[in-house]
Length: 428
Image (tube, rainbow, N blue to C red; front, side):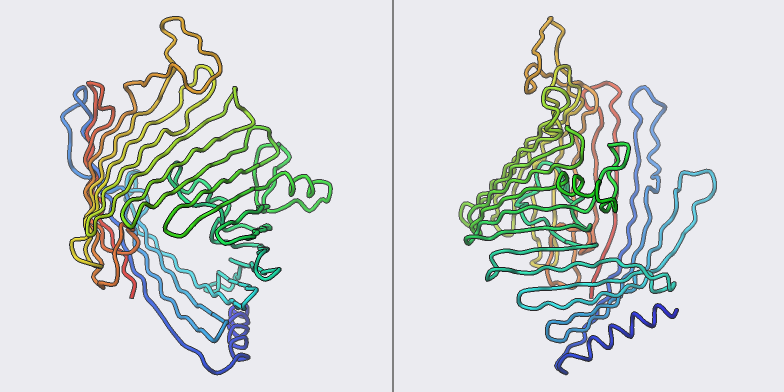
């Protein structure tokens, strides 16, 4: 309790040293989720039962209080979580609840910013949740970030088509980052994330080793290089390369491009490579493309992806995903309807039935198994009762989503699944 009072006192005193022009704001965010599921086991199974299983039940509430005074910002947040444990275990499922109290303070000047956040205030077991800052140098041509815990973006990422959030493991950790902005639209630099390899040579753990002998190779061997060039609302190109750890194989890269043709048409493409040090042995490639046409209040689009294709002999990996979608904003800023059709064909394998030996290559001779294939139709409704903006983010509205489709659609034992997801998250 004493630690809690000390932290709150520091925040109060820090706010008082600034000018008396300030604002108080607050907000409440509440949410709940219910996920139901039923499954037809296929022709070879007993008659199907469509009684839904409760896959997931959760609720969440957040209350925040904000104080702003020129460049100083302070925030106090209480968060409560309510969750039903595994409904499939032998004993009856029970609701559990927990809450947390956290505080954050930051100061944003013209050329530098620093942020400090604490958690665990409700119990007195205070922890540092964020500590980071940045400095602009040479008339804001160079930006240097130093973090113990922090960072909320990757500078050089322009799209996210091939693997959703594949680079997010770079966020929320410590390290150093240098971003150079020589001309308008061009940005390049390096990131040295705060993690290193354990003694076994494979385990990635947060932080840098204290031992100086281990620190230098860990620091300079684990890095990300990125470059981006963009013209707002016209086009953007990006490249990121990560040298992830001390092994020769665990490197990856992604090349990204986006084109805006007028105000309505968006074209995107990505090529990603994984385990680059293992080309000819264990490397993988992924390809993705997106086409979207906005004819408000309707939007039409499609994703096409070839994911995780091995580029070595007798590979048995890879997926094809085709996802056309349509969004209709039935009521401006309030009601959105979305239709998704997702087809996925997986478990690729190389056809050697005719004695073909393609050797190490880029997938020549691949065929597709009739297993692990899915076809789903998913209509969704998003409703924001506040009427202040709507998109297909389930964390911003009431959502009603029905997913109906088949697994292993090319086999006689195909199974039919129905999923119903109901959730809401309102902020006011």
